[in-house]
Length: 160
Image (cartoon, rainbow, N blue to C red; front, side):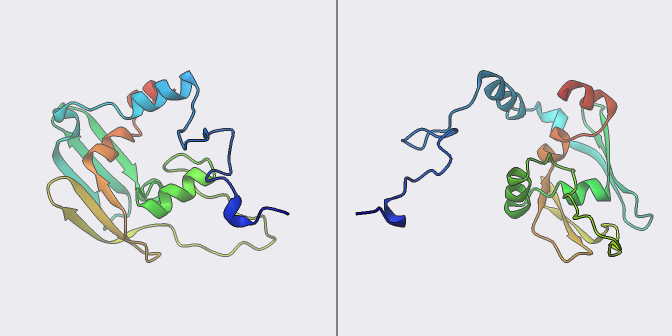
């Protein structure tokens, strides 16, 4: 008698999960995740000035209460969308926030308009929401998320 689909274990990837559904990680990965999930100081994630350069099509700039300055272009922001769908898609393809999807090699690639927001909306006092020209609009970019993914040289050096 063979086992059918109902008899399969809960987790198909046995190398990263135990039989009880507990995720097993290396000490290095645990250290990285602890660093990524550490609580940021309040001043580090509280903006003083937010500039969305929608008309120019250049991106987003934030001056933080702790004196730090961050900026992102719209291409990076679209590829870093924090919604569940985009997050899961990045995880499956082992991409970091901001990394574009790999495109299939074709002789004549189709033109793809660069990402740009059609509408930018504040979400309470904690985030921004973008409605992108590709129709996507479910990502909520919290101040915490944006600060954790600052692209400046100083922050990039800390994550290496």
